[in-house]
Length: 368
Image (cartoon, rainbow, N blue to C red; front, side, top):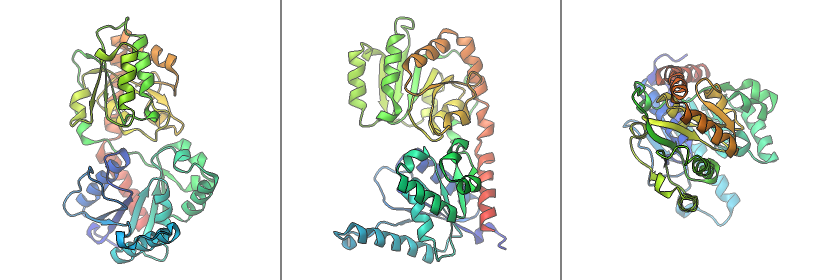
């Protein structure tokens, strides 16, 4: 049995370090284990321009095949990628590799066969979206059964997989971004409704605009601020014009220091059709914002919110329910403040110290 942490090596395997929720979780975990004295490497298939930075001491490897080795045969390229990843595990000899997102989990299990490395797969999003076809679901059941560990984020996710995988899996939450650990703002709330997320069809910002427009006469002093960017930005701008609310809708884009920008807002909205466990929702709750969020199929919202206690949960895609919930929060500031104070208690539940210790204990159990 190994003793000191520095004798143990952990690898993290993901597509890239582009600025998304799963990528941030991986970087945070890598830095935590590095700080605990483990040797840590990060393996990504690609390297993109706008990425999270890694702390010094975390070595990075690319598993994509070199340009000169790319063939016109997709099958040959696939096997070359498998071989390169397999060689990384053989040469670097990590005790454990954590992978996430769709096919990456398959790759981790297959390429660690015949090596000393123990694969731990994780499902961070909606399982039906990561494994949408019958073949992929069968592969997930087969390969996950061979993994050394399986990490899910919600209890609902267990039922998607076969019984063996569901029973083997553990539920481990994501830790809270330290930037959002702060005393709750207790002053008068700014008349702003905020949302944070990529501007795509899944986030359903259209429903936010339509609900806001329906309530504009009742709450004429409020504005809607959506932080983020994406392919639907121009569509959102056009819809705001069409609904006559363009002068009360702001789209600042991707900004630094989100916590400072939203902590005094009157209300936070998450209107996605699908999520795993939303980091943006965790962060809004931690700041003590009154929150309205949709009930996503993964159960991610239910993992965080008790309806009517620390937030309001509405059916996905239900604009009338959103209007009613917004009216309830905005029309009764005392009720909204009560909800927000309960929400802030998540800081303790998902503190990095507590959550990272759970991940460490799980990894240690597999390594030992």
